Image (cartoon, rainbow, N blue to C red; front, side, top):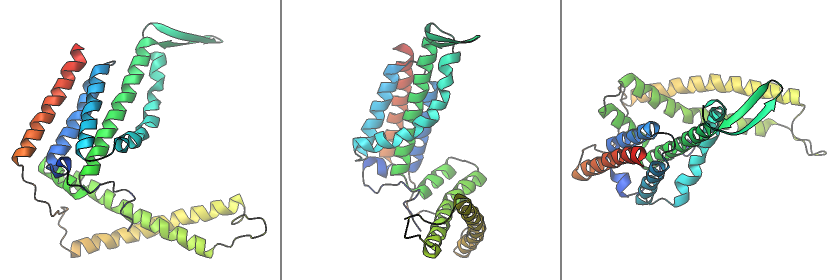
Length: 265
């Protein structure tokens, strides 16, 4: 199994790694909700939130570029809100007339769009920090302790588990294709026409679905044989210690301070 395909957990012994997973999950969710509640154009609050993330990133012994590079995955999705710069009422910054239509960019629209992008960027950084410092079984245990419905936890757990099964089956099919496909030495091209490749790809997708379904059934039966009773077990005891309570109180205080900064400055 290729455990590095989706699992982004980074081994470490830092303060952030040692925190109770319930503390990290709660603070991450509160941080994301806080970003959503901040008013548009709260630049000082956004900057303060980023500083908090950088401090936590450094406390986890990660490099500056660890969160910075990976968080840009959110930008293409945030760009879906670009239409807000044209529809948000406000003072016009620029306008174009195409036939009977006039397109206007407003200052309020630009501020809202920039705020949406920054909120998304900061929220993704918080989620990355959570997954990089918390093992997946620990996160599931944290959700169970936080009274998240058991059926939802089971769905998330199996979805995560079967993603690896799906990747393994896909890699096996690709290796089998490479082993059985002829290569044209003269012109350097591989395989046949585009239509032939489309047929092969469609066949591989169908085989992948069938083989993954069969493999998932075997995995589930193996889990039942090993004592699975609807809960993912972990070897890490979840006991709230004094540092956990102190960090939780500090985190909540910082989130409240961000809301105050966003509304007063």
